[in-house]
Length: 92
Image 1 (cartoon, helix red, strand yellow):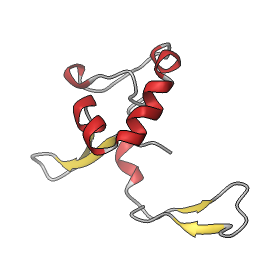
Image 2 (image 1 turned 180 degrees about the horizontal axis):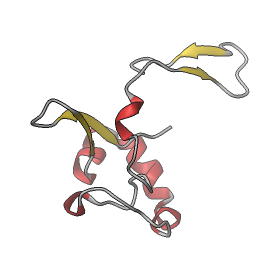
Image 3 (image 1 turned 120 degrees about the vertical axis):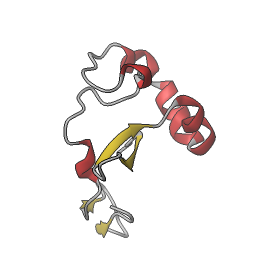
Image 4 (image 1 turned 180 degrees about the vertical axis):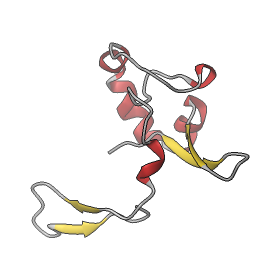
C-alpha cells in the first residue's frame, strides 16, 4: 500500500496527515514516485475530495477521513508468498 502522507502534530497536539509533496516524494521515495507517475493518467481521472487546497496532488487519496488511523499495529498477509505467509508490517 502506498501511503503518501506523513503524520505530524498540529498546534493542539493532535495528529494530522500531511500530503508528501512531489519534490519530497521524488527525492525521498523515487521508486514510489516512478510507480505513481506510471499510473498518473488513471489517477488524474479520480474525484478527489478533501485536503488542503494548497497541497492537493493527483496522487492523494480520494477521501481524507481517517488518514491518521494508519499509525497503529497491523497484521498483513502477503498474497502468493511462499516463504513468509504472515508478518507484522514494520512501523505499522
